[in-house]
Length: 150
Length: 77
Figure: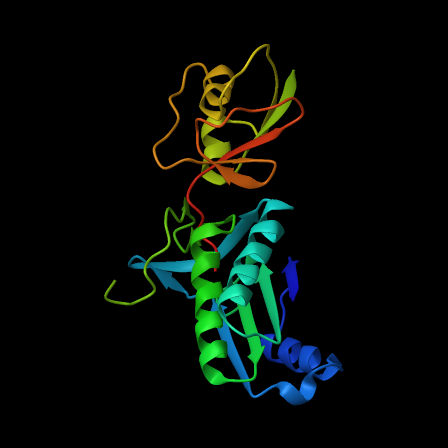
Protein backbone atom coordinates (compact mmCIF):
# COMPACT_ATOMS: atom_id res chain seq x y z
CA UNK A 1 0.00 0.00 0.00
CA UNK A 2 1.29 3.44 -0.89
CA UNK A 3 -0.32 6.78 -0.04
CA UNK A 4 0.95 10.11 -1.33
CA UNK A 5 -0.37 13.58 -0.58
CA UNK A 6 1.24 16.07 -2.93
CA UNK A 7 1.10 19.78 -3.69
CA UNK A 8 2.71 19.11 -7.09
CA UNK A 9 0.79 18.30 -10.29
CA UNK A 10 1.26 14.65 -11.30
CA UNK A 11 0.62 12.44 -14.31
CA UNK A 12 -1.49 9.53 -13.03
CA UNK A 13 -0.58 7.28 -15.98
CA UNK A 14 3.16 7.70 -15.35
CA UNK A 15 2.64 7.07 -11.64
CA UNK A 16 0.74 3.83 -12.31
CA UNK A 17 3.32 2.60 -14.80
CA UNK A 18 6.30 3.45 -12.57
CA UNK A 19 4.67 1.87 -9.52
CA UNK A 20 3.84 -1.36 -11.31
CA UNK A 21 7.28 -1.59 -12.95
CA UNK A 22 8.97 -1.11 -9.56
CA UNK A 23 7.08 -4.07 -8.10
CA UNK A 24 9.33 -7.09 -7.86
CA UNK A 25 7.27 -9.38 -5.63
CA UNK A 26 4.04 -11.09 -6.61
CA UNK A 27 4.07 -9.46 -10.06
CA UNK A 28 3.03 -12.72 -11.70
CA UNK A 29 -0.09 -12.94 -9.55
CA UNK A 30 -1.56 -9.74 -10.97
CA UNK A 31 -4.57 -10.47 -13.13
CA UNK A 32 -6.51 -7.24 -12.75
CA UNK A 33 -5.74 -3.56 -12.26
CA UNK A 34 -8.56 -1.14 -11.55
CA UNK A 35 -7.91 2.58 -11.81
CA UNK A 36 -9.93 5.64 -10.90
CA UNK A 37 -8.71 9.12 -11.82
CA UNK A 38 -10.54 12.20 -10.59
CA UNK A 39 -9.97 15.47 -12.48
CA UNK A 40 -10.92 19.06 -11.67
CA UNK A 41 -13.82 20.23 -13.86
CA UNK A 42 -14.12 23.82 -15.08
CA UNK A 43 -17.75 24.01 -13.95
CA UNK A 44 -19.74 23.30 -10.79
CA UNK A 45 -23.27 24.16 -9.66
CA UNK A 46 -23.89 26.19 -12.82
CA UNK A 47 -20.76 28.36 -12.44
CA UNK A 48 -17.45 28.44 -14.31
CA UNK A 49 -14.58 27.34 -12.08
CA UNK A 50 -11.18 28.98 -12.55
CA UNK A 51 -9.30 27.00 -9.93
CA UNK A 52 -9.46 25.34 -6.56
CA UNK A 53 -7.55 25.17 -3.30
CA UNK A 54 -7.53 21.87 -1.43
CA UNK A 55 -6.90 21.98 2.31
CA UNK A 56 -6.11 18.89 4.41
CA UNK A 57 -5.21 17.84 7.95
CA UNK A 58 -1.62 16.55 7.80
CA UNK A 59 -1.38 13.30 9.74
CA UNK A 60 -5.12 12.65 10.04
CA UNK A 61 -5.60 12.66 6.28
CA UNK A 62 -2.97 9.95 5.78
CA UNK A 63 -4.25 7.98 8.79
CA UNK A 64 -7.87 7.96 7.58
CA UNK A 65 -6.84 7.14 4.02
CA UNK A 66 -4.83 4.18 5.27
CA UNK A 67 -7.90 3.01 7.21
CA UNK A 68 -10.00 3.11 4.02
CA UNK A 69 -7.46 0.90 2.24
CA UNK A 70 -7.18 -1.50 5.18
CA UNK A 71 -10.98 -1.85 5.19
CA UNK A 72 -10.84 -2.70 1.48
CA UNK A 73 -8.06 -5.23 2.10
CA UNK A 74 -10.27 -6.91 4.70
CA UNK A 75 -13.13 -7.31 2.22
CA UNK A 76 -11.34 -8.17 -1.01
CA UNK A 77 -8.21 -10.04 -2.07
CA UNK A 78 -5.74 -7.32 -3.04
CA UNK A 79 -2.10 -7.52 -4.08
CA UNK A 80 -1.33 -3.83 -3.78
CA UNK A 81 -2.86 -0.37 -3.92
CA UNK A 82 -1.72 3.17 -4.70
CA UNK A 83 -3.58 6.35 -3.77
CA UNK A 84 -2.29 9.83 -4.69
CA UNK A 85 -4.22 13.00 -3.77
CA UNK A 86 -3.42 16.61 -4.64
CA UNK A 87 -3.54 19.45 -2.14
CA UNK A 88 -2.92 23.17 -2.50
CA UNK A 89 -3.77 25.16 -5.62
CA UNK A 90 -5.25 23.16 -8.52
CA UNK A 91 -6.29 24.13 -12.05
CA UNK A 92 -9.05 22.69 -14.24
CA UNK A 93 -7.94 19.48 -16.01
CA UNK A 94 -5.42 18.74 -13.22
CA UNK A 95 -5.68 15.31 -11.64
CA UNK A 96 -7.06 15.57 -8.10
CA UNK A 97 -6.96 11.92 -7.10
CA UNK A 98 -5.66 8.57 -8.33
CA UNK A 99 -6.84 5.25 -6.88
CA UNK A 100 -5.18 2.15 -8.37
CA UNK A 101 -5.76 -1.37 -7.11
CA UNK A 102 -3.98 -4.56 -8.19
CA UNK A 103 -5.47 -8.01 -7.62
CA UNK A 104 -5.62 -11.44 -9.22
CA UNK A 105 -9.26 -11.11 -10.27
CA UNK A 106 -11.38 -8.28 -11.67
CA UNK A 107 -14.15 -8.48 -9.10
CA UNK A 108 -11.80 -7.71 -6.24
CA UNK A 109 -10.10 -4.92 -8.21
CA UNK A 110 -13.34 -3.23 -9.34
CA UNK A 111 -15.07 -3.44 -5.97
CA UNK A 112 -12.06 -2.41 -3.89
CA UNK A 113 -11.23 0.63 -6.03
CA UNK A 114 -14.85 1.80 -5.84
CA UNK A 115 -14.90 1.24 -2.08
CA UNK A 116 -11.67 3.15 -1.49
CA UNK A 117 -12.84 6.07 -3.62
CA UNK A 118 -16.25 6.33 -1.93
CA UNK A 119 -14.70 5.98 1.54
CA UNK A 120 -12.18 8.70 0.69
CA UNK A 121 -15.04 10.96 -0.39
CA UNK A 122 -16.93 10.55 2.88
CA UNK A 123 -14.24 10.04 5.55
CA UNK A 124 -10.86 11.50 4.61
CA UNK A 125 -10.19 15.11 5.69
CA UNK A 126 -9.83 17.17 2.52
CA UNK A 127 -11.75 20.39 1.87
CA UNK A 128 -12.22 22.12 -1.48
CA UNK A 129 -12.51 25.86 -1.97
CA UNK A 130 -13.49 26.89 -5.49
CA UNK A 131 -12.38 30.06 -7.23
CA UNK A 132 -14.98 31.11 -9.80
CA UNK A 133 -14.29 33.23 -12.92
CA UNK A 134 -16.18 35.99 -11.16
CA UNK A 135 -13.30 35.94 -8.59
CA UNK A 136 -15.73 34.73 -5.92
CA UNK A 137 -14.32 32.06 -3.61
CA UNK A 138 -16.65 29.48 -2.09
CA UNK A 139 -16.21 26.33 -0.02
CA UNK A 140 -17.67 23.13 -1.42
CA UNK A 141 -20.05 22.17 1.38
CA UNK A 142 -20.63 18.48 0.65
CA UNK A 143 -19.81 15.71 -1.79
CA UNK A 144 -22.56 14.41 -4.10
CA UNK A 145 -23.45 10.78 -4.77
CA UNK A 146 -21.27 10.88 -7.89
CA UNK A 147 -23.98 10.82 -10.57
CA UNK A 148 -25.01 13.72 -12.82
CA UNK A 149 -28.65 13.21 -11.94
CA UNK A 150 -27.74 13.02 -8.26
CA UNK B 1 -4.77 19.68 32.12
CA UNK B 2 -4.08 21.26 28.78
CA UNK B 3 -5.00 20.39 25.21
CA UNK B 4 -4.63 21.85 21.75
CA UNK B 5 -7.73 22.64 19.68
CA UNK B 6 -7.49 22.89 15.88
CA UNK B 7 -9.93 24.21 13.28
CA UNK B 8 -9.97 23.54 9.55
CA UNK B 9 -11.41 24.90 6.30
CA UNK B 10 -14.63 26.97 6.51
CA UNK B 11 -14.80 26.45 10.27
CA UNK B 12 -11.32 27.96 10.66
CA UNK B 13 -12.51 31.05 8.75
CA UNK B 14 -15.69 31.16 10.83
CA UNK B 15 -13.88 31.16 14.19
CA UNK B 16 -11.12 33.40 12.83
CA UNK B 17 -8.15 31.31 13.98
CA UNK B 18 -6.55 27.96 13.29
CA UNK B 19 -5.95 26.76 16.85
CA UNK B 20 -6.39 27.35 20.56
CA UNK B 21 -4.65 26.12 23.69
CA UNK B 22 -7.10 25.21 26.43
CA UNK B 23 -6.33 24.59 30.09
CA UNK B 24 -9.01 23.04 32.29
CA UNK B 25 -9.63 21.00 35.44
CA UNK B 26 -11.86 17.95 35.82
CA UNK B 27 -13.56 16.00 33.05
CA UNK B 28 -14.76 17.74 29.92
CA UNK B 29 -16.23 16.46 26.67
CA UNK B 30 -15.32 17.40 23.12
CA UNK B 31 -18.49 19.50 22.93
CA UNK B 32 -17.48 21.33 26.11
CA UNK B 33 -14.06 21.98 24.55
CA UNK B 34 -15.87 23.85 21.78
CA UNK B 35 -18.04 25.75 24.31
CA UNK B 36 -15.03 26.84 26.35
CA UNK B 37 -13.02 28.03 23.35
CA UNK B 38 -15.90 29.60 21.40
CA UNK B 39 -18.04 31.24 24.07
CA UNK B 40 -20.11 33.37 21.73
CA UNK B 41 -20.70 30.83 18.95
CA UNK B 42 -22.79 27.62 18.97
CA UNK B 43 -21.21 24.57 17.32
CA UNK B 44 -22.32 24.72 13.67
CA UNK B 45 -24.56 21.82 12.54
CA UNK B 46 -22.77 18.93 10.78
CA UNK B 47 -19.42 19.80 12.39
CA UNK B 48 -17.14 16.77 12.64
CA UNK B 49 -14.76 16.22 15.55
CA UNK B 50 -11.54 14.25 15.98
CA UNK B 51 -9.28 13.49 18.91
CA UNK B 52 -5.68 12.61 18.10
CA UNK B 53 -6.67 12.21 14.42
CA UNK B 54 -9.49 9.71 15.01
CA UNK B 55 -13.16 10.62 14.54
CA UNK B 56 -15.07 10.88 17.83
CA UNK B 57 -18.57 11.65 19.07
CA UNK B 58 -19.10 15.00 20.77
CA UNK B 59 -19.66 13.37 24.18
CA UNK B 60 -16.15 11.85 24.19
CA UNK B 61 -14.09 12.81 27.25
CA UNK B 62 -10.78 14.48 26.43
CA UNK B 63 -7.51 13.77 28.21
CA UNK B 64 -4.43 15.80 29.06
CA UNK B 65 -2.31 16.37 25.96
CA UNK B 66 -5.02 15.49 23.46
CA UNK B 67 -5.32 17.28 20.14
CA UNK B 68 -8.99 18.03 19.45
CA UNK B 69 -10.00 19.06 15.92
CA UNK B 70 -13.24 20.54 14.57
CA UNK B 71 -14.04 20.73 10.86
CA UNK B 72 -16.89 20.72 8.32
CA UNK B 73 -17.95 17.69 6.23
CA UNK B 74 -15.09 16.51 4.03
CA UNK B 75 -15.10 17.23 0.29
CA UNK B 76 -12.04 15.54 -1.18
CA UNK B 77 -11.67 13.29 -4.19
